[in-house]
Length: 514
Image 1 (cartoon, rainbow, N blue to C red):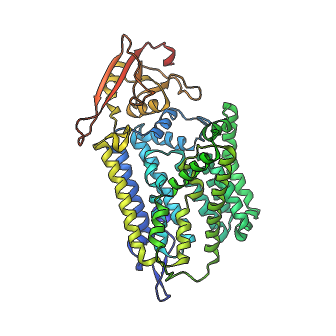
Image 2: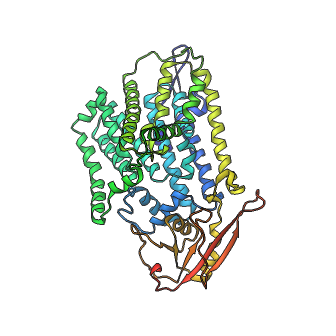
Image 3: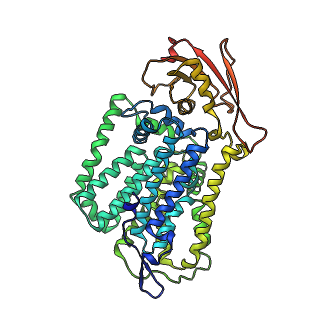
């Protein structure tokens, strides 16, 4: 992977106008250096998620519940590609935290590597190419939220970066193989998350505005793209039809009208937009704009790079305008910062492409990279601190530090080697399955997905996994209910936090256990 992403030769312009080769660059700006730094970042976070934290997070828990079997479609809200990948990994690495860490950081590494390749084709100077990909860590949804939440979105951003890279390659040197690859990336994006539809629509419009990209779209080989993308999407569409899963209704339930006034709608739009772009936008503006005299600005023309930069600009501008018009027309305040992945993922590439044309950046890059490093180290420190000091002021419920694995001995002793566990909701069910790999976990009331039946050595209902929320109070205990209070493993916190769980054995023929 590193060899593929780093194989393009790089040159660096000198102040005298001559061009130096890769050996003149600092390590952090060389292709292999960039990808080694990205790999180290991913490995450090993966190690925290797999070995230091005690439990999986909320979004992972939902997927943990769903992948108890391999299905063409699980729930209508999200397409299944992430679940297919997770199911495959869990056949090898088990249902615990390791499988989630491997998948999350493999996807983030792939996304960052592809964004870097895009930057290499839009930006001339290798130092700005590297700064652009490092800046992903300053998009808070990527640099922080991606460790806590986000599953299907990580597949989608790989599809976005891959599709953009392939399209740029098509414009440079079109071939049937590249058009086939574009179709594959579109299929990955659409099977990753439905938000890719918005990116694809805006991408097409943006390409129609730019002459060289318009020619690429009207090339007859674009039919290969359509055919390749249509194959897996047709199979998925058939599965939706057979399973009677209504994607439109599920999407409307997620981001549909909330009947707020236009001022509340616009406010939610601004909050989501700012939440996505910060701290990157503020940091880049404060470092590179004040007192900038434009020294060292790129003056030579590069038609292909400039065309790609304009397409990125069009995607960002058109996407933001369409989003604002749409949310105002629908009247929804359900817009979330992560939804801007579809239009702003490549924002750092565009910003640094423009900065290269403006100039005045060379002496300021070290300070900028220093702040990025401080942010990255700070996020790592917070993640390390949560299992060691899970104070509510730091992490709220701190579910990553909750010792759910301590349920396993009690469950296995009481129910045998292949238990069936009944949980209250998908989050509780998925977290139980990750903590007790031998268990089949079902939900009290789940109309969309129920794992297949299998021989069971015992059944019990476990309550309290979502304990601590005001609407998840423990029910009154029954005659055979076992109540457990478990102290958290938090060496830096005294007094320790506790979790209260209830374990209620059920007869094997109880409908809840089926």
